[in-house]
Length: 350
Image (cartoon, rainbow, N blue to C red):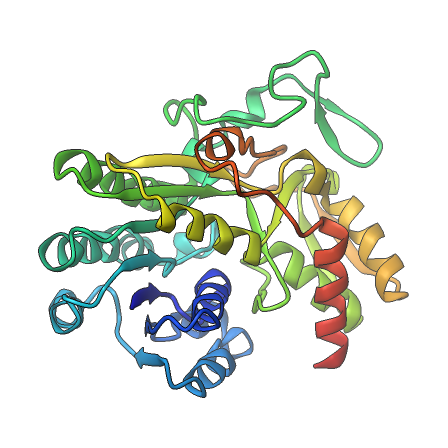
């Protein structure tokens, strides 16, 4: 039995379906806060309904900020829990500015609630945390970047050019955004529980996580919302950097398979891994627009705003080398083009 928080979100839903197909019981914890964050159109209720059709799935409409209820769930299933996959979060760089306390309580307080329940009732299980590259703040913006026709690019002779940014990048002396700060707090707690209590905890610092099951919104879910906008002929607003900001995109299923590799051979001591699409799956917003237009055969409508998001990355490509070294059976299988084809197909169908 696995516990999955944020079980109707992009990664949580993919994880739930993946392990249910392997006949593993899943306890899903999700109260659809996404609808509160981004509006009814971004609600994940449709995924909750889909999961509930599987007899191996049990759903709790529980808020991870509620320590008592979280403790009770872990206590109830303590002898059966074999893994915890924590994906629940306030995920938006911008939304956090509206309600900083809510952002912190969900991301940081919610995480420590889960860590304590895990430590008390199922300490032998691996604890997987979906962290973010925002823990590094905007340090990447101070790398030697060059402006090209459609993207920002790092100089070819730089150590990060070929594989991307590794875990050696400092998390200090940079602007994280409030969201980045709350996620960094959670990230550090996950590490420290692994070290202090000798537990099998891991932080996966994700790049741009994507896929056809994403309920993308303007404030979160870049590729998903961009696909929705183009397919439905809606105007898309790009926040600064001339639309040349670069992201490495990784499909949710490749993320979940990385989780599975860790679960099969978990390591103690608070491990940390960057996890993204790498150079092969990287693109700027302008490049993504061109790809989606070709796949969907639809013309985009977009406007580039002058002001960028505070602390936002100009260029980010994740180096997955550390994880691949520890778990050599894992590799990215879904290309950026394949991800976009699936997303366009899904949007046209629905």
